[in-house]
Image (cartoon, rainbow, N blue to C red; front, side, top):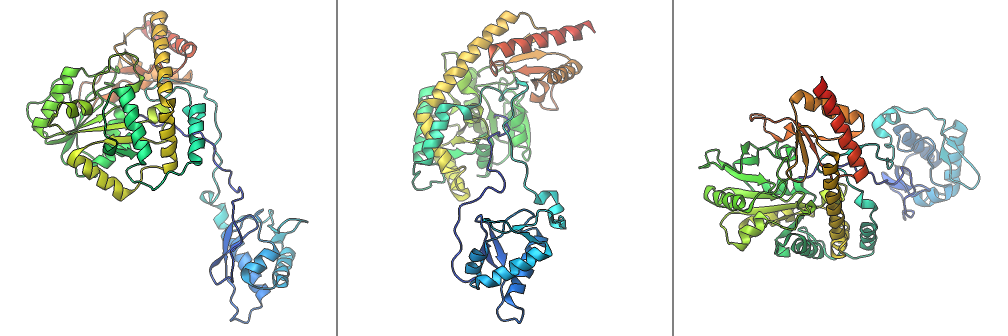
Length: 491
């Protein structure tokens, strides 16, 4: 399960002209008028009353300004466009506008549409902060070193291969929308898993999601009953995503003899065991599947971070192991691209077959597509072109470089280095102080204690994903950790 990261792509500026054409025909009460910049507003004209038409237009525009529907500085339609829309004479609108200019509601300028007087005082509606457009986000330069698992790394949204895939997707017809996922995208994911994980997956067994959490929630809506077992220790994000379920801590190295906790499912991350980032060995995977089959428990395999390791040996996933051996255990495989592409793209998938797969497909069909077919097309193009595999290779090279930096920096008190992350065990007070001191110096690390359930023997310290940054930044960060730990020992 990967933590989320803030999206930093700029969006359209508020007030940007939108494409549009004048609405044809005669305006009726409550219809929309088309302004000079294509924005529509409601205006009422009633020919059955004695009030002159210019006075009605004046009253309506006053009302719209008071309601905040037309704001100070914004344009109103030209007299020609408004007259055509209302099916009145242009003179009627010009008379109304002249009156509003005299009253100070409108201002005019040569070769431009009339505008609401920008000096008008705000109304109760426009004074409400929620009625004002938020500031457009700006891309911010990173002023910190993020060493938390699931964060850091370079921004894939600036990668030429991904940007090309996105541009190409805008010129590609995705075809009929499939709520389970576009066929090309599901095939590309299946081929990606074959090439990078050695998995043999039928594309029809793949259902697209907006990320791991969405996949988890989709599964639970299909009627998974009972408590949910979670690894202890395990990723805090998994427990947060299941806050409405009864959770039972589980040590996968010492599985219970019976299902006395009435478990319906167990969620595991076998390819990145918290906190060290180690891999669950094959014998324990087999025992877990045997136990789950005997206890009637669904195994939910979160494949978080599996692509990042650089070791050549790839242990079969629980899903592939169950399918290839005809194991009776039900296994659901959940994957995400958020770790590699940031949560800004919100893309993932869930793999299941048999009756459970049919139920998931029915639920996804009822809910509709998890994310845009345009983004699905971009993901398919990025995968098929080898862009993601090249990105994975760069990450593995960065990990190898990071390992060399760790070896060169020298001894760090309390360091346990057994897998994908660095774990520094300390007392609870030292861990809290260390995280705060590092944050003040612009270095973010994770809490070791967050991975344990509240009712268990919690271990304290910090967790460092050392391949998140380039060698120079990592070296400086580790030397800072060394210095702070040395100061703590002296105290």
